Length: 79
Image (cartoon, rainbow, N blue to C red; front, side, top):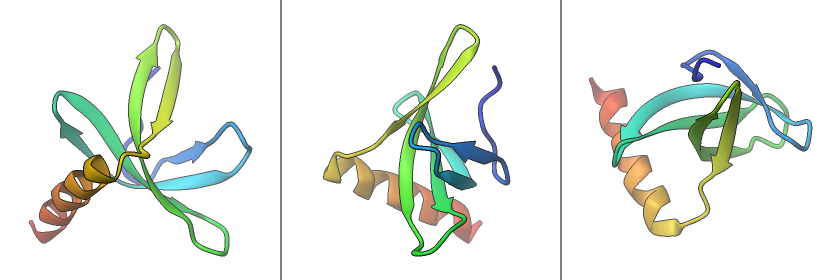
């Protein structure tokens, strides 16, 4: 299973679909910035974990980790 890249569509276990807005690497792990394709708009970060043939998206819930990821994604956007 290949990891998600910007522009891909990710379907979560609850059936909601999110667009991959951006991707980055943080502390050796791959993360994606996800935005919903429905209203109200939902935004989240998720860690990409490949387990065999499956891609697991682990939603980031730690506030400090979210702040660091947001900084990284903002820096990428300025380039």
